[in-house]
Amino acid sequence: MLMTRASEYALLSLIILSKASHPLDVETLSRELDISKSFLAKILQALARKGILKSFKGVNGGFELARKSSEITVLDVMEAAEGKSPAVFNCSPTKEDCPSKQASTCSLWPFLNRLQGKVDAFLGILTLEAILEE
Image (cartoon, rainbow, N blue to C red; front, side, top):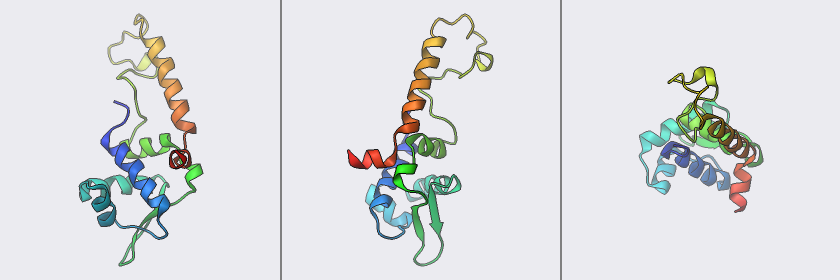
């Protein structure tokens, strides 16, 4: 599955944060998005660890973008939220890593591998700024 809830919530949070004039806390974001505060906190912390968000502690703490929206790609966000690269199919990126060891005889593997490459390339150039302009 390409877009999970974690990726969706990460992108929605970044859209809200990009429009905010000051850091927003998890409570505010979870209320606005109507999602679990604990689940969102984990996602935002993952984004902060990857340098997509800055986090601030204390009474006026919260999160804000660490980079310009034009410098944050959807691929960056999805990899941070998921902890791995997004996959279109459960197919390995190399024939050697194929869990079934059938990639060399699989007639779908070349197609799926090319498709994954195109999806990765697209997500790697699609920025948060482009989403905001839609």
